Length: 286
Image (cartoon, rainbow, N blue to C red; front, top):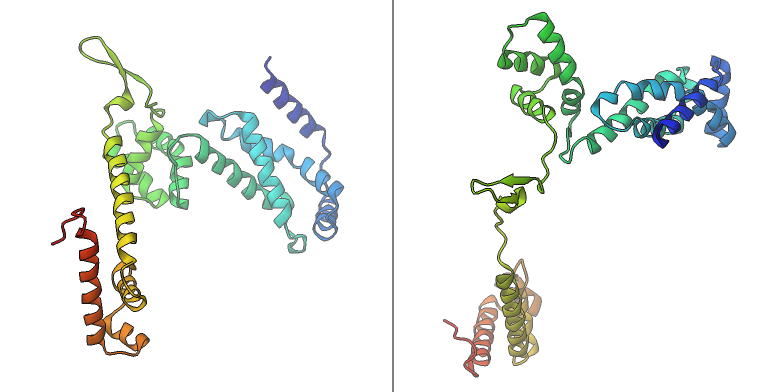
């Protein structure tokens, strides 16, 4: 017997030994935890409901995940329920905790069952966890029912499109495929599946070349800007080098000059930049 089985047996035995709580005792423990943060009260409250955690976790064991992990995630949901429970509402803690335990386990399954997220909306989650059951029920009702009809009935029952049902059914029908899975080619040689995935990214030499060119252009521009006076530099930066370039009118109001004067200063500044950038025949500007 492996360590995982031993651990699970110990958890189950401990849960079975925990005493049941009467309604009044359960409420007292919940109040003690909520108002006084009594750790002992929390421990007694959660220990008494570990049977519930194990029972709910067992309903999801067919997803192929570790039963120990499902129980641990259910325990996280149980603690969350204890943190949010309001004793004054006169609702039994087990009734309230059931939702949190199930939600925590389901979230764990969605995060770990596949490398692709299984559902993002409540309808998608419902489809993920109920598709097998609904499909089995419909199959028992009519052996001759075809896939499109089945998908339509399931879609109406859950509130999703039949295309969503078909897509989820195909995903649940097979496991994820590794990109490192070998593929045997016609000549007998083998390669990884990832070798046949095309990449739109530029080649490394192109990336390095573009980076070097960008640094070179930045250096030239920084050097050329030094020939401008303060007002010319401000206009060029605000008009040409900022993502949302300022208008001639806005700059004119800011500098206390007309927008036509701003245009003249900008034109003169750009001519200075052309001269600075081309004086060593480094760049040819149109």
